[in-house]
Image 1 (cartoon, one colour):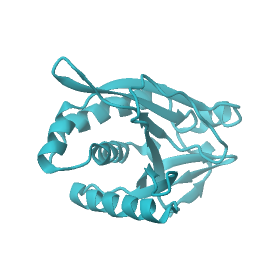
Image 2: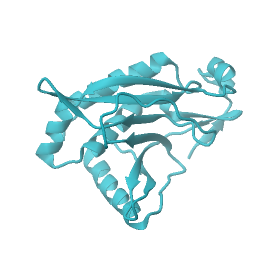
Image 3: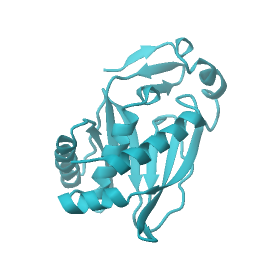
Length: 207
């Protein structure tokens, strides 16, 4: 359950003053990841690449305090749990949104991912978790994409991780990833640290 806190009593007080009323407070960093280990892991264990990427994002974000804070107008919300949002193609040819509670247990996260995305695809109804801090994801796999830049609505200031189709280069599998974040929530230094930690998670994840 989130609690409302005074942003001026947080380490993000100065950022709140500088960026909360900005017409475009979102920032995007792009990094090309080596996902070779993740591809092998998924193939050996028959796990979906998208699920593994979502798990790695959740595991990395859960270790950084910035991801538990969400700026909203004149206040800040503080969460104690995270969820990963995925966009699900539904049976009618459209898309829906699906929040998946993050757990460090990969097998449990995989079960939840498969069950929830299947339900959303079949019912064509989005599924949201109100009590989790949500990290958005979007996999635009119809083509190779170098970067996806800022999108913003006042209704959605959550961080978002986006990617396109993976590429094979020199015996490696690489994936350019765009990370969009609200400047009140974190600065470029923390965002860059997240991307570095995410690569390490991708390199070291085990079953």
